[in-house]
Image (spheres, rainbow, N blue to C red):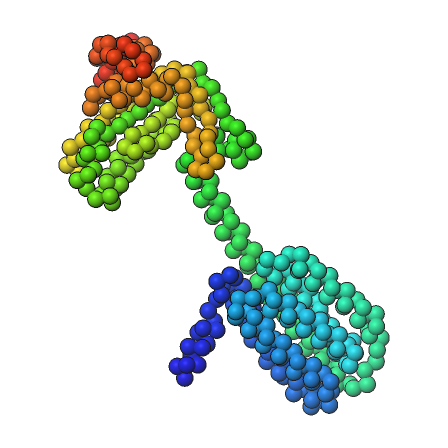
Length: 401
């Protein structure tokens, strides 16, 4: 008994290359077709219609072969074998029993069911066309034929009802499967949209979806911020990789929330560095003000996180304003990035900064000096730039000038 149960469970296991829903539908069809043909065997022999009895025996063998093919994963081959059996059975039934036996109705079910065959739209079209052509030919040849055996006419009603039931069931399956597919496509589309919008600004994502091949824009005014955790590489050596990633994710997730709050664009993270821009890809007049307010919030959020988790780390932040070039680069894991002297200088403001401070260039200072309080650091030697006057951002003015 246990061996039979094990064999039955194995029989019901869905092959890897087809959907579970379709495999179940194919099994149900097979389990329905086999007993029907077995009944026909007894009925035909009882009516002395031995030729059709032998045909039904052959049909049983074909259906069993189709089940074996489906069980081995060759579902398409099994379905084509069943389709050939339906065609042949209808033709033999018309030759031996006449039109009023009703076996021709199964050709209609074949034409309908053909379109649910997986991975075979061209085969489905041909199969449907052939079945309906055979139906028309049989109609022309046998519709006027008078059957001598009155009992044969009794086949017409059950065959018609069964054919109708198969058509309704097939369409119900097709409709349900279509709904499931559309739902799955909708979910997949939403996920891809969310993923793309997380990778780059939505306006840039829309341009890519519209077919724009090269995306390169110039902005005369924008502000760029770099934030870097001082000594994080050395500090991380004392923790496991999982702890390091968890810590960094906690910090940068807080930054992401602030990016959304101030309506900025997160460009990327580079190790333990975080890059943000304002005024791109859509220009905004208050780009410097927005990024300064963001910088103050980021510093506070970082200090709160490290204090709550008892972490001894400091954050350096650098800001610069000016013209930038923005565009999408790469073909694999493409990236929306910024270039230009403004970007390089902002990076220098961070790397030449002091932990815990927000260092800005004189350009950014001139834009914000009547809106924020600053402390002049003085002139420093900046790599690749020479002598530059820089300032530390302190706070937003309560009463603006």
